[in-house]
Length: 512
Ligand code: ZN
Ligand code: CU
Image 1 (cartoon, rainbow, N blue to C red):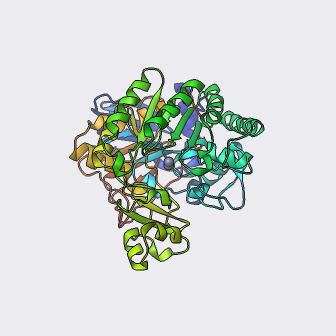
Image 2 (spheres, rainbow, N blue to C red):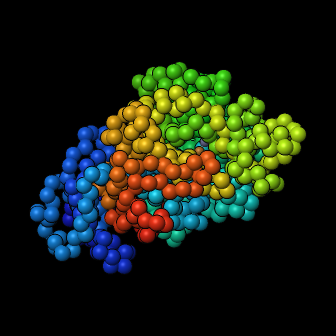
Image 3 (spheres, rainbow, N blue to C red):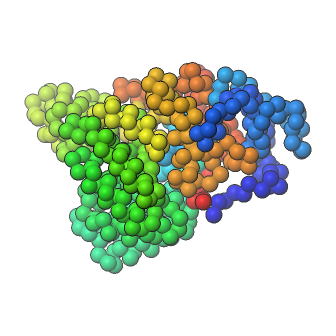
C-alpha cells in the first residue's frame, strides 16, 4: 500500500505537517512559473506552472498565479521564474549502492546535485538489511565493512528515518546479503533449511515495505547458487507485489545464457524482471547488444522486463583478477595495501613494479577499479532502448570513485540527448522518472500530477551537463537549478560552493 493518498482533502493536513518539519520556512508554498513542463510520462512537454503545497503537487496549469486554489493566500506564494527551464519530476536513481551512505552522509550531495530525489538501494545482491556483523566480507564491503548493523528492514527503516537523508530511499533486499545472514559457507548451494530461513527473512523485509529482491550471481559469494535457489526467493517477492533485479551471472561470453536464466527465474516466480547495468563486457563481446536487446524484446512478449544502464564505457567494482585481460584500461579507485596508487592506471603500476597486470592486481587487493570494458556503440544502443531506465551504479565509498557517482544523470542529457540525439527530451526524462517509478513500484512519484508527491527538479536544458571525469570524479553537475524533495527545496544550483540546504527525504514503502 502507498503511504500517501491523493485525496485532495488531505492537502491542508500535509501543509501544516511540512511547515512544522521545515521550521516555518516559506518554501512550503511554491509556484514554479512558466517552465517547460516535462511530466515524466514521456508525453510532449508544455508551457505552464506547477504549484507545490506542503509535500504535494497541488495543481498544474497555465496562469495559476491568477487562479489560486482556495486557502492559498497570494502573499504566501514563493514564486520561481522558470522561463527557458524544464520542470520535471525529481529523478529516481534506480541502481545505487547508497544503503549506508544515506545514513553516514545524509546530505547526499553527489546525488541531489544531479536532480536525484529518490535512490533505489540494495542492488547487485548487496543490501545493508537484513544482516548484522561487525566486519563484513567482500562483496558486502562495497557498502563499507563496518556498516552492517540492521538485522531487519524495520531497523534499517528506523535508521534512515533517524538520519533524515536529503532524498527518498526505496530498498531492495540482496540475495547475497541473505546468504551471508543464513549460511556458514557461500561456495555451495543453500540447503533446504537455509532456503527456508532466507525466505522468512525476505518475507519479513517485504512486509516492511521493501520493493523487491536483487541478486548478484556474478559475484563468487552468490555464483554457487543454482537458479532454483533464487526462483524460490523471487516467489516470495512476487507474492508481495515486488520486483526482481539482477546483476546477471555473466555479462561476457555467457550473457545470453545468463539472460535466459534471469528471464526464467522471474517468469517462473511471477515477478517483474529488471536486468541491472546492462552491458556486453570485454572486447570479445563488443557489438553483442545486437543480440541481447532483441532477446529482451522477445522476453517482453511473455513477461514484464526492464533494464537499467549508466552512461559510460567503463564499469567499476572491486579489483578482480578475472576482469584483467591486459588489453582494456584499468583505473585504480582504491587499494588498501597501496593507497598511493589511487587514481592511477594499472598498466603503469605494473610496469613500475616490473610485473604483469594480474600480479599487480593481486598486490593491490583488496581494492577497486574502473574497467574500460564496453564499446560506445553498445552503450548507445542500450540507453536508447525503450525499456531502459537510468541508474548511476555509483560507488560512494570509493576514494576515487567512477564519475558516474556524480555525473550519470546530467550526462544522459548532455551527451545522449543534446549531442547524439538518441531520444527526445521527454523520453530522457521518462527514463529517469515515470518509467522507473512504474517498474520499481514507487507510488505517487515519477510523474508531475495533481496530488503526487512534490519531488521536482528545475533544470536548464541548454546547459545541463556532468563535470565529473575519471581524473576529477568528485565534481557537481551544472544546469541543475533547483531540486525539491517532498516539497522542500533541497538544492540550489549555480552557487559558488554546491551544497544541500535541506534534508526532507523519506524511507518509501512499496506501492502499486
Ligand atoms: Zn552490479
Ligand atoms: Cu551495482
